[in-house]
Length: 246
Ligand code: PGA
Image (cartoon, rainbow, N blue to C red):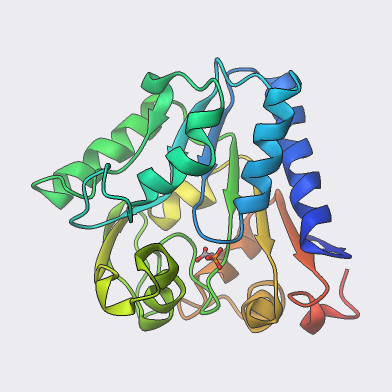
């Protein structure tokens, strides 16, 4: 893992948007995996700014979002789809047919997950995966536990995850859905390049576990240690457990 500690979140986010822009310039038909949450907000803002300046053309890019709440239709304001519309999709020239999302309101979750995995396989997998990490070490909705799953699946959300998502529901954690649909570990670990961002002191333990800890299903992100092309970009607060490591 290549760990890079930035002076602050904004520097990391700006660098990340620059990396995405360079990757798209090199391969205009890039297939990119996109996260939601607080972490990528500045990255998306910077990507929109680059697009407005004519420096980032999404016209041939394909996107796959990582996860969605179970039971929420795409137009629910709390959905991840609505988040992506607000923060990125509405502001750039992505072709609607190349935006891919798990549908949390699909009648049969298993079939929806199989559909999504097939769609990703048809697209050739992810060229570039942007990731956040939960304070509990989760990646997308692959939550810590006894088992991890390779394929897309329905996932029960941990208390930690629901708490950190309360802002999408007026800070009312009781309104955060209990489950989600998520890409599995397989699709994430098969991405050809991964950039994981983590900011703030409440991510420090998860970052240390991911980079330094044992491979364990109790810290799903630790499996990124097996991947040959991972950038971990943190601010000083999230990286404070890594002092002395590369
Ligand atoms: P956050 O979530 O960006 O809202 O902290 C990150 C994640 O859960 O992956």
